[in-house]
Image (cartoon, rainbow, N blue to C red):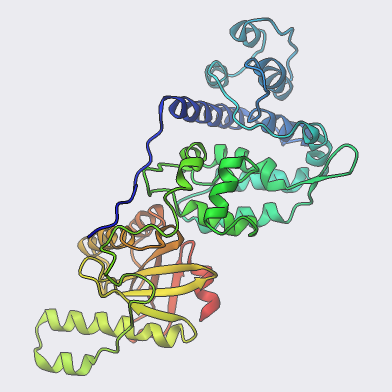
Amino acid sequence: MAIAARRVVSPDASQRHWYNTECNTASLIQAVVRNRKEPWSGRDIWNLLRLTWITNGSEHWKVLKVPALADLFRGTIQTTSDLQGSLDQLRLPPSVRRAANHGSGFVNFRTVWRNSALPWCEQNRELLSEIIAAVRGLGVNDQERIAVALTIRSLPRIPSPNDKALADPGNLLSPLIACLDPKMRFPVVNGREGVTKLLRKLHLAYSTLDDQVKGLIGIIGQFGISDALMLDVLAEDLKEITIGETIVPSEAVVGPGSTSLPTYDEAERTAVLKSRTVMYRARHDRMTNALRSVLPKTKLEAGNHQDCRYDAMALGYDGDRDLLIEAKPDHEKGDVRIAVGQLLDYRRFLPGRTGTDMAFLTITKPSQSYMNFLLDLQITVLWYEDERCLRLRGEGKAWQAIERLM
């Protein structure tokens, strides 16, 4: 008998409004960045951050949005009681003006650090400018997002005015990075209660920023989460349906603890028949067998449940994270499409699906078109250099961890 599980979260009216506000904030910040022609000063970066902030009152545009835009575009303003009237006084580029007219701001960054963030931005202007440039160029490979998180982690902490407390740079910067990410996949990692609870549920509350980013990115595309901003809005709800969920019969053995990855006798299989089907299976088995040699210290298992017969699972390949691997000797259109369907279908049956990454394993590197397709779905691409399956290469968010195990 199947265990009931809540697998999709849907925003209510209030959450939809908040999500739209976060999207409006991203549109405004992206319009500002597109229309800026001069190098970023520390104060400019601080003003970008101010565009993500809110105050306790409903008219935070008076003290945050309008002054920040005036400063960014070197304008002067006499704030009026009307947002449109205040914006009309500024000579803003049309796209900025349109975006600014909508409700924006979603981060209640603690007041004690708002002013001290300005000298911090000025002191770290060069590296912050590089981060902004890198984020604007983010593509489908989520390893690039993890690299941005590593760079943020290298920044000094932000002091309070009295130097009695320090703020994490990720709390300050991740909302801005989330807004600038062209794919909207860099998560908001700050001290908000819903985010903190979700990180605890994922066992990432005390992990480094790059590990937190990797874990949260893995939720996007599951449970109805379309992007990082929706993830931020629904973080409180997600804590109820993440680690430990199962939707398969309780008596079934699926996921970690299934069976050891079997050794296939490719010579015997090849000898049975010389048909293309048998040859294909032999190549497939050669690939999975080779994983033992390529990853000698990694525990590998194969799925044995009728609904979850995955080719291989690399248990604990990256700390507490597992890697679900689907192997296809060829990487033509049909092979790739079938592999994608299998990975997404298999993962939903796993008890630790939010802690499971996905990989497509093949022989020789696929075309760039299919590389982009797989990476966009957060599927790492692994390939053997040739039919001997001796040397493994890869690209994607799981590749660095796999490479360390080789």
